[in-house]
Length: 147
Image (cartoon, rainbow, N blue to C red; front, top):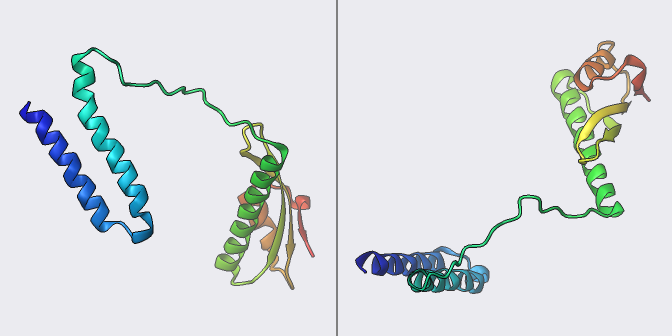
């Protein structure tokens, strides 16, 4: 019984602390969540005495079906990340600003399988830049294009 009361008091103190430190616009949500925690802390021992199972199973195979537009958004974001990475690497190694357009291939899990082609918009590219980009992104020399 002492442990039960200690847990309730601890949950109440956590609720008060969360209410104090949370920003004003979050307080109503914090109160709802901490209220649910306190209710569950109070109900759990009662349910245990009556042999009621309050636990629930989470399905590990839960998936969200992606629509075509979601896949396009993911592909566009991954392409943008590759392009920004290439720009950053060019800037770090050569100190040059470049614009980069990349073509990527994704697998069925929407992960990057490979970079297919990279177009680099840059004035007077250094001789070693093509080999540098090809090596980093696993491209052939003809798949790195300067414009």
